[in-house]
Length: 113
Image (cartoon, rainbow, N blue to C red; front, side, top):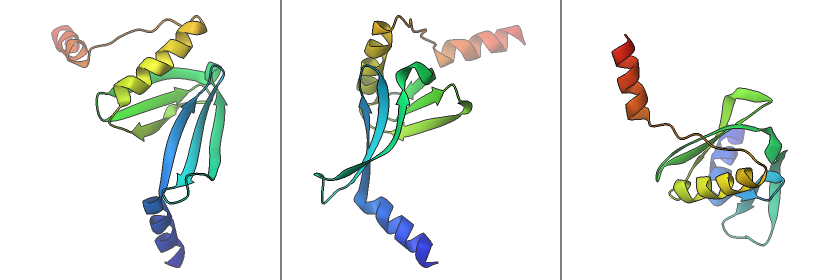
Protein backbone atom coordinates (compact mmCIF):
# COMPACT_ATOMS: atom_id res chain seq x y z
CA UNK A 1 0.00 0.00 0.00
CA UNK A 2 2.81 2.42 0.85
CA UNK A 3 4.53 1.65 -2.47
CA UNK A 4 1.32 2.42 -4.36
CA UNK A 5 0.91 5.71 -2.50
CA UNK A 6 4.51 6.74 -3.15
CA UNK A 7 4.15 5.94 -6.88
CA UNK A 8 0.97 8.05 -7.09
CA UNK A 9 2.61 10.93 -5.22
CA UNK A 10 5.63 10.74 -7.50
CA UNK A 11 3.44 10.91 -10.61
CA UNK A 12 1.82 14.10 -9.27
CA UNK A 13 5.11 15.96 -8.95
CA UNK A 14 6.89 14.45 -11.94
CA UNK A 15 6.63 15.50 -15.58
CA UNK A 16 7.74 13.69 -18.71
CA UNK A 17 9.15 15.40 -21.78
CA UNK A 18 9.70 13.98 -25.25
CA UNK A 19 12.99 15.15 -26.75
CA UNK A 20 13.78 14.66 -30.43
CA UNK A 21 17.19 14.82 -32.01
CA UNK A 22 18.10 13.95 -35.57
CA UNK A 23 19.01 10.43 -34.44
CA UNK A 24 17.16 9.72 -31.17
CA UNK A 25 13.82 9.83 -29.38
CA UNK A 26 14.33 10.43 -25.66
CA UNK A 27 11.94 10.60 -22.76
CA UNK A 28 13.12 12.77 -19.90
CA UNK A 29 11.46 12.85 -16.48
CA UNK A 30 11.97 15.58 -13.92
CA UNK A 31 10.34 16.97 -10.82
CA UNK A 32 8.05 19.96 -11.29
CA UNK A 33 9.92 21.61 -8.43
CA UNK A 34 13.50 20.86 -9.55
CA UNK A 35 13.63 21.15 -13.32
CA UNK A 36 17.42 21.50 -13.32
CA UNK A 37 17.79 17.76 -12.54
CA UNK A 38 16.27 15.18 -14.89
CA UNK A 39 16.49 11.49 -15.67
CA UNK A 40 16.44 9.91 -19.13
CA UNK A 41 13.71 7.24 -19.02
CA UNK A 42 14.48 5.79 -22.42
CA UNK A 43 16.48 6.51 -25.52
CA UNK A 44 15.52 4.87 -28.83
CA UNK A 45 17.01 5.49 -32.30
CA UNK A 46 14.57 7.32 -34.56
CA UNK A 47 15.16 4.55 -37.13
CA UNK A 48 13.20 2.18 -34.83
CA UNK A 49 9.99 4.22 -35.22
CA UNK A 50 7.46 2.07 -37.10
CA UNK A 51 4.31 4.18 -36.98
CA UNK A 52 3.09 7.51 -35.68
CA UNK A 53 -0.51 8.38 -34.75
CA UNK A 54 -2.00 11.43 -33.13
CA UNK A 55 -5.23 13.11 -32.13
CA UNK A 56 -5.23 16.89 -32.35
CA UNK A 57 -4.94 18.58 -28.97
CA UNK A 58 -5.05 15.21 -27.22
CA UNK A 59 -2.28 12.64 -27.73
CA UNK A 60 0.67 11.30 -29.72
CA UNK A 61 1.23 7.54 -30.10
CA UNK A 62 4.66 6.24 -31.10
CA UNK A 63 4.92 2.65 -32.36
CA UNK A 64 8.44 1.20 -32.40
CA UNK A 65 9.65 -1.81 -34.42
CA UNK A 66 10.65 -3.98 -31.41
CA UNK A 67 7.05 -3.83 -30.06
CA UNK A 68 4.69 -2.69 -32.86
CA UNK A 69 1.55 -3.60 -30.87
CA UNK A 70 2.61 -1.72 -27.72
CA UNK A 71 2.69 2.03 -28.44
CA UNK A 72 4.07 4.71 -26.19
CA UNK A 73 1.30 7.27 -25.74
CA UNK A 74 1.83 10.87 -24.66
CA UNK A 75 -1.08 13.03 -23.65
CA UNK A 76 -0.39 16.58 -24.79
CA UNK A 77 -2.27 19.62 -26.00
CA UNK A 78 0.34 20.43 -28.66
CA UNK A 79 0.23 17.00 -30.34
CA UNK A 80 -0.05 18.46 -33.86
CA UNK A 81 3.15 20.47 -33.34
CA UNK A 82 4.97 17.42 -31.95
CA UNK A 83 3.94 15.36 -34.98
CA UNK A 84 5.12 18.07 -37.39
CA UNK A 85 8.53 18.05 -35.70
CA UNK A 86 8.75 14.25 -35.82
CA UNK A 87 7.70 14.24 -39.48
CA UNK A 88 10.38 16.84 -40.31
CA UNK A 89 13.06 14.63 -38.75
CA UNK A 90 11.73 11.54 -40.53
CA UNK A 91 11.70 13.45 -43.83
CA UNK A 92 15.43 14.17 -43.36
CA UNK A 93 15.91 10.40 -43.12
CA UNK A 94 13.98 9.91 -46.37
CA UNK A 95 10.80 8.56 -44.76
CA UNK A 96 7.61 9.71 -46.45
CA UNK A 97 4.45 9.90 -44.38
CA UNK A 98 0.99 8.75 -45.25
CA UNK A 99 -2.02 10.69 -44.04
CA UNK A 100 -5.14 8.77 -43.16
CA UNK A 101 -8.53 10.16 -42.40
CA UNK A 102 -10.44 7.98 -39.94
CA UNK A 103 -13.84 9.20 -41.16
CA UNK A 104 -12.94 8.28 -44.73
CA UNK A 105 -11.59 4.89 -43.65
CA UNK A 106 -14.82 4.10 -41.74
CA UNK A 107 -16.94 5.14 -44.74
CA UNK A 108 -14.93 2.92 -47.07
CA UNK A 109 -15.12 0.02 -44.60
CA UNK A 110 -18.90 0.37 -44.32
CA UNK A 111 -19.25 0.53 -48.11
CA UNK A 112 -17.21 -2.66 -48.53
CA UNK A 113 -19.35 -4.55 -46.00
